[in-house]
Amino acid sequence: MKKILIINSSIRKKSTYSLLKRIEALLGESEVEFVNIKDFNIRPCTGCENCLRKGTCPLSDDANLLLSQITSADGIIIGTPVYLRHISGYLKVLIDRACAWYHRPALAGKPVFFVTTTQVTGSRQAVRYLQDLSVQWGTIYAGALPRTMFNLEKELKKRTFSKFLFYLDDKNTTKYRPSFKQLLEFHTQKVLAVNILPLDLEYWREKGYIDKPYYYDCRITLCKRFLGHLYYKMLSYFIGKNKVE
Ligand SMILES: Cc1cc2nc3c(=O)[nH]c(=O)nc-3n(C[C@H](O)[C@H](O)[C@H](O)COP(=O)(O)O)c2cc1C
Image (cartoon, rainbow, N blue to C red; front, side, top):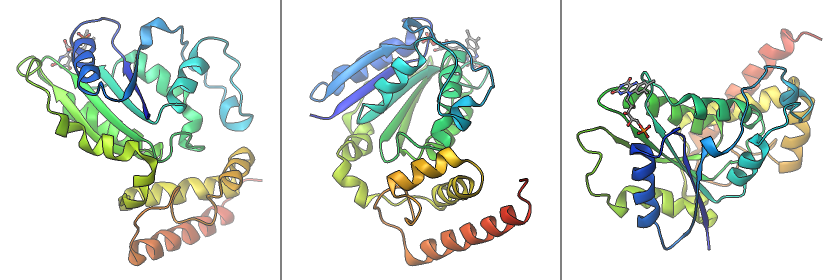
């Protein structure tokens, strides 16, 4: 059975928590695990970049525990309250601690779904940020459920999660059509792996990404393949010329 991890990024067990709990009940046929970020001791990133350069983090806390729970799930639902038109600080701290996933995409091909709650404003900006994050992570953005004080209690429909549930089965990723933005992000990370970060190159080689048009087999038109490759060649040339040894 496929495993779904639901993450509540609010310090409280109120609006976001209760909405996520209703989603948990709705998706009850799958194996669902529910966590509250606040139950984990996760310290803010110190900015040392060890995770990028050496593959380790000097902080000793619960971040790795939660990050490995996320990587072992087949699909992830992340809920956050909107704070000043953005995600909660708790969630941002966790995302910063997963910085290496931008380069070594541990969640590539997994569906992610976002849930936001707000009094009135800011969900559009928060969801846009999260959607962009899902591109950087190489995940499949499977939608978002932004709720305000006016529709928080509105009935949930299973079809809202149909894309998420479809891509929960990794056999279905072959039917996925990545956007051009996703392809450009993939090729940008490939250029960085090949030219800048040796640890990334090792990872990319091990995963067999280097010769692929995207992280996994999926539907990419010939035109997009060509443009992606051209972008890769041009960026490689530019970086090669300006490389600081
Ligand atoms: C620090 C802070 C910032 C907030 N910023 C916004 C905001 O920009 N727009 C808004 O409509 N509501 C804002 N809110 C209200 C919360 O988004 C809203 O109450 C949310 O549903 C709380 O979720 P929770 O009950 O799961 O903690 C803010 C609340 C806090 C505490």
